[in-house]
Length: 279
Image (cartoon, rainbow, N blue to C red; front, side, top):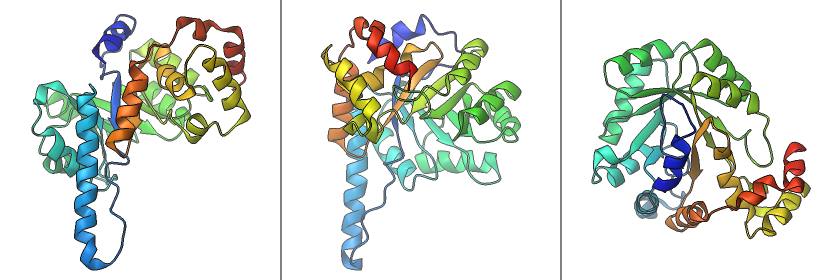
């Protein structure tokens, strides 16, 4: 996956640029199924093994960006097990501040990971001064803004100085509502990390619009999920796309889609552009 990131770097002026694709950790901390107490330990071990194998598969597929959070259950210790045996300079770890003490939250994440954290996301600008000091002290490399609505992210970019934002949904084949945010980020040199592009609509064609766009994609030999993974990085502000996966097979399949080139003709197709504009 190195080649696509090099192409993107040439047209992006962001001051902080994570790798182009990363593993979103929201499924890595999934708890084992609750059953009879005697079997709970075995289920937990199986859940640990599944998550670690998923991280290993992502790494072997070329991913060097791993996102986690204390809110993701056992995600941080599982990442620790998988990544501590890898050369530390080869990958980037991002986590999210939780609780009322951002410094304590970051240090606790580092302890659970057994690794330094590169990027820390916060959901309000009150937290930014503390994170800025950690950045100045060299504890972290970058600060990110996180919010459920792109308008709140737009405010944080306008009023604060984050290095990047994490945008969940709101910019993809079926929804480009966050484009004003991307324009502001591009103007200010703020990286945009997009997650949530492989929605049920994209994966299963669960809407008329998804089926119509899929039909155009198929004429170019491209599946809808393949186009959905490639689309966000067409915008110069988008530096990275996070892909959530819960199994090695799932992340290998997604990585295979990433490696398949999308013909430039698709992006210029008149019907395709019309369908995007009506999304």
